[in-house]
Image (cartoon, rainbow, N blue to C red; front, side, top):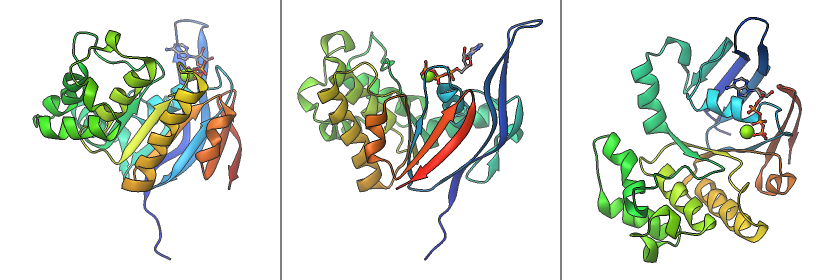
Length: 229
Ligand SMILES: Nc1ncnc2c1ncn2[C@@H]1O[C@H](COP(=O)(O)OP(=O)(O)OP(=O)(O)O)[C@@H](O)[C@H]1O
Ligand SMILES: [Mg+2]
């Protein structure tokens, strides 16, 4: 069997939030994790366990205090801020709990935004992505004119705008009822199945582990166990 490529690797990664003298909080501690190309992984843990912290590190939104993170073999600590921003834009698509759409932009403009920032605005691609998530009839709607599930589908289309290798989702169903949440999980799952996107989902909701082949349990900033199915 061909050996799978490692897309993300964390080696002894620690993030301490320093809010001034005698006020340090551990975000994550000594995380060792290898994520392979095309994998579907759920990181499961209670509130405050370090899930978002870890995703922000993997997603190049933040930098570790200690340890090393590599993306496609490239050491993140050796990257300039510009290079980090470029990789974040080109390689990683984010989906968040609170959707984080731009309220003043309609659905298609929200999906176009990452393309515009990358200098390749492509309306037909944006339309295609919105079609893929079943929103071709909502392209001119603004976020406040869409249901939660629809907003999250726009966010998924936006995450795919620049055709990233990795999709990172932080509690993607946290603000949705369970039926709508299930639809969203199915869409995310299909991105992995159909297009081979590496999918990293963080949640406290055990139900989301159904789709994963690999579940990493995190508690108090540490990986406490890993289950492969
Ligand atoms: N910007 C910050 N400054 C200081 N402390 C922080 C910051 N962000 C997170 N923390 C702390 O780091 C720890 C891990 O937080 P994190 O947000 O990663 O948890 P989480 O698992 O995502 O929780 P939730 O399920 O509630 O979203 C918590 O103790 C939190 O208080
Ligand atoms: Mg969180």
